[in-house]
Length: 432
Image (cartoon, rainbow, N blue to C red; front, side, top):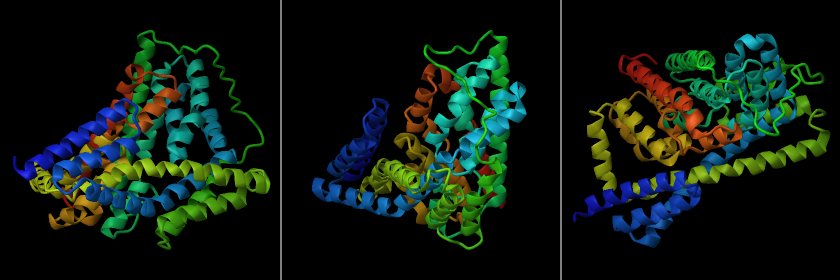
């Protein structure tokens, strides 16, 4: 058998192994290592040499991405520990009342992501509040996961932010963080409207079908939305303003902008955080949480060994033919497929940027348009059932895949794919 064909088969088998292993709960760090060995063995580059190539890719990814992960965790942890996240949530739901429960929970989640709060922190922050109000409105809990993650994918389309995928893409193509603003805001607005409308419609249909909110044994939702002593929600403007200003006005690197935002939060909320002892504890928590970068970089490093074997050229040619030579369709297919296989939007994007970044430009892609297409594509097939955020959110909300994934599929796969098509059309007609 031709070595190129054998190598390509090895790549596909390795990717299938990653998907099946992820669904069975095996660590992506272990899966990526096994997949790297498999690709090396079928690619004729030697097991040890191939694995060394993989490890070099992992190390390079950690070096470039760890500061971003740490910066995001620092800012998010300080805002959460200060009580600001609870204050924002309470403020919005107080004003919306029970009539707009679903949209209120959706909006709260959107704002918390915009404030730099980690998605996993938002889940545990919003869940008890959502349950308390869903109980009052007799709305089934199966909609809660989609309210949270459906809002997250909408906010992550916004240009000019320190979002990891935005930073990776703009850095690779050498454009500002706000590049492609028209497309970015158009896709973000579309997703906010489409996901919000879908969730409200499903809540109404659920009530018509006679579905109810069913508390689980031992659950208590005594959330005090009139709780006093919390910081004013508008104080979020200070640290977030520092990040956005540093990033977009002074062109400070994204990780440094996040560090500055975290420092601003420390100064602003020092006493609320519990002084030096509380700040230290929060720093330790952020550092621990930032270690999740290893799992992401494990799958990113896989791109290094893939690009080093003969089957890579066949894969590249096949993807180019499938896209018809269009750089934006090519980017969409590559990012969506790799993100879907790995269950990681960040992993998929970094893989494609490292493997095909120069190719996309050589095909005639406009850098700003590519950034927005890639940003949208990353939020499509990454949200398949085995994605870690999907699994954790469903588990945290005590909702099964059967009950809640259909709503997640619409808000984080179907609607984000439509948003990507919008971004591709904009790119093809020259709107940036």
